[in-house]
Length: 311
Image 1: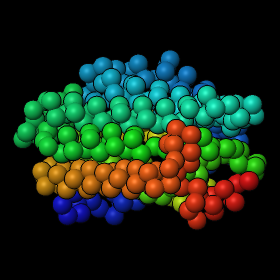
Image 2 (image 1 turned 45 degrees about the vertical axis):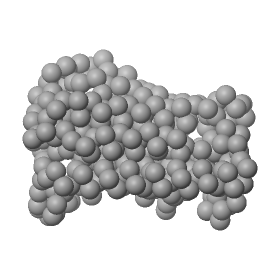
Image 3 (image 1 turned 90 degrees about the vertical axis):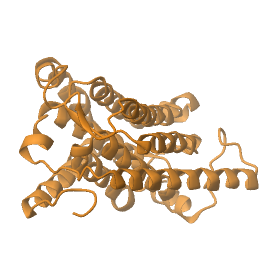
Image 4 (image 1 turned 180 degrees about the horizontal axis):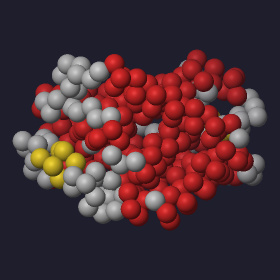
């Protein structure tokens, strides 16, 4: 696989595709019915929290799932899923501006958690690569570049005042101002984050996971990227907390541990997110918009198509 990953077999790619389509299928189950979502994102996590995760994700376990980040990420992702369900299925909430602040806040929190993790990996000083908390990490300038890229991605979050609930039976949470440019910038940053901080798991938790939410955002239910992202992330991390040996023992695909790969990915993430912020601020200035009150991309064809498909 060249500069980024060690060569994997046909069966490795088959497993990767299975992960992608399984996440997409469960995401559809979770969004198609209220009770499907409640089962997946409330009932199942309660059972796992009590009966499974204290053993499979115990602090210091050999697979690295017992660190603070995994636990925080699990419950913040689940909080996002449940919060979005409340907005979707309690009609009065979607009409309240304070409720519409929840999606950007939980999204920003998740991104900043990961940016902090990048900075933390730099602080380890593992310049030649080493196992820390049972995860292989190589510290370098890439951690700083990608941490900054994550902060820029948060700065570029916009237009949440325009969030609304689709009129079809699935009642999806539609965010039309979250256009393709932001999604791609996020994907590049997040993949670089997984590559930097969870390197030898990133074939799945980076590449497969991002694919599983980006495909639905562009081809199944446009405008609902954040909903797709929260649900696939929650599903994946619940699986990892339950079966921590998957990426290390069952279906491992290691990175090449090549410093050039780390540097290139994080530099690309930094450039992409900086370009997005510059473009967006120029658009705000040119159109005299207030990013706290106005939608930035309401004049674009992409925005108009998303709205037309869901009203």
